[in-house]
Length: 226
Image (cartoon, rainbow, N blue to C red; front, side):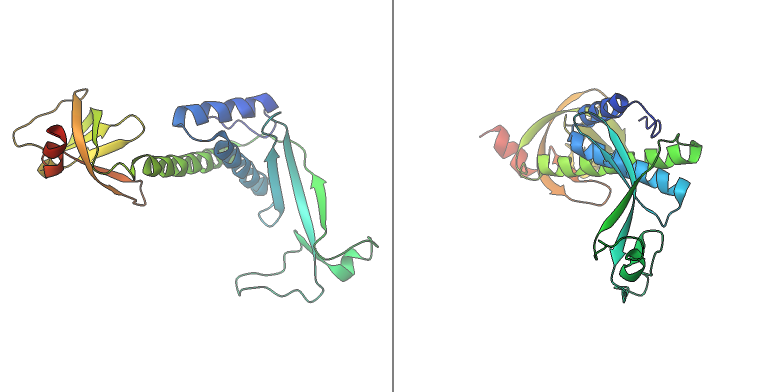
């Protein structure tokens, strides 16, 4: 996954988004949003974490807008929780804004365009982590949606790996696991073997949905002879 830098060619950003979306089978918009977030974090590490910096990529042209925002707040602004505090890098009180802007009103934003910049090594690594984290989340959500309503189905797959008696099966748009006690006794599979299994449960877990497979479940035999 390449996230070269904010000064990357605008078409390159779209090409990256297109390539990742196709490879991972997720919406291009999700990838673009992840790249925007990565750029914002990289910019904050350059200009300061307290700045309200936003990145927006035009989904059609690939044009990148990198901007810093300052918002007018009430003179008596108070934090909503004890961890929040007045941020003079992203906020300005109304009385102070009116000294230089007679049209100042609460909620108005002052927007400053920021110049392109190259990501350093740390920023590039951080950007990569942000994008891949978002992509993994989208993949997990897609996989759960793909299989959550397929409990009770027989599916075809390919043995991906065998670990401690458990068989991991590539199902095309995700993978499932057949634990040792869900397999037929003395049945042995090797990597690359084609296999038919029965989905008996789909569990939404933090590390990704677990598609539970079986060849010994009563439902498997019932489906085979239906």
